[in-house]
Amino acid sequence: MPSNKNLRSWLALHLIPGMGPVTCHKLAVHFGGPDKVLGASISDLKTVCPLRRESLAALADTGRQSILALAEEEIRQAADKGATIISFDDPLYPALLQNIHDPPPVLYVFGNPEILNCKGIGMVGSRAATHYGRSIARKMANSLARQGFTIISGMALGIDTAAHMGALEAEGITIAVLGCGLDTVYPPSNQELYKEIGAAGAVVSEYPLGTLPDNFRFPARNRIISGLSLGVVVVEAANRSGSLITASHALEQGREVFAVPGRIDSVKSAGTHNLLQQGAKLVHSIDDIVEEFSRLNPFEKKAFLQDNQEQKHPVQLNMEEAALFACLDVYPQTIDELVRESGFTPQKTNELLLLLELKGFVESLPGMSFQKSSANAT
Image 1 (cartoon, rainbow, N blue to C red):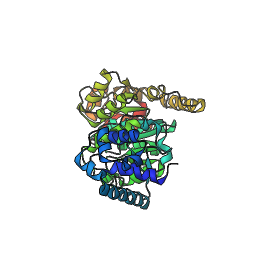
Image 2 (cartoon, rainbow, N blue to C red):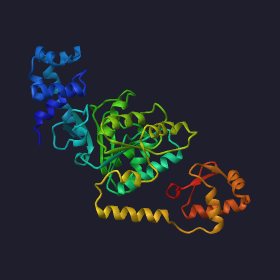
Image 3 (cartoon, rainbow, N blue to C red):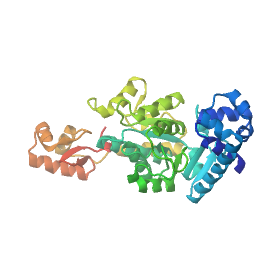
């Protein structure tokens, strides 16, 4: 286990204004460690790489004592809040993340830092997700968690929240990567989810305590989601969305990229369809993700296949139920649309929809709309 001195030195480097992850690592490698960087002269530091004025001021003799004191105070405050700070050379630091181009020098962790070295799948998508997108994300995350995968996302509204909840419902492990300090829950409505994730997995951030969720921090946060993951699943994403930034990071880091198709006329699926055109793997079922990774043991594979078979061969429908079910889609349809397509009377359509819903084939939505349940969509 690295000494407290190493943690303090890494954290001090990380807290220096204007000092990004790449510069921190470049200096640490050149001088032989973060403590050696803090002991180097300004003239020697300048020979390694250009440094900003504010960084040089913090690395001057008087500035160094202040930044080291700040690091010690940060360690104390984190401990008071029940959080752990791990440095880049800590054995608990996730190996996958260590190997990206710009790994964070330190990670703040609320929860169990030991689970960061995991068999992780990133799952991201639109904040303003459709019912279809949220449902698919939740069910996929649930199934993947039951197969021993850790679900990694950003705790944002929409797809992220659905993915975390799906993993928690399976009593699996999930990791949330924040774009703010650990002591700031964002969005505030996910306060309870934050606690549940911390209890069942980990909430992670590279940002110091007290850092607010400014917009520019989230693209940088996304490289950690993909960096912790074996692969990233994009469920719903518009063009130019943060989810596509995560997918781009994943490709740069040599990770697998998966995309869930949606409606061709929906702007919320335009980004995922773009990924498919560029070579992302189309996800039609959980099998498409699992088969890319050979780390499941035979017992897990057997349980997974049995579970899938149960879902693919559900309770039998009678002829009328089957006829109406054939008219349904995974996208919402109104009663009037189903009456026109099926030929049944409104009363009969309502009766059959109720029976299908009780059997788990149909989901009712606000506004008297209905759709196939995600489990029986194929």
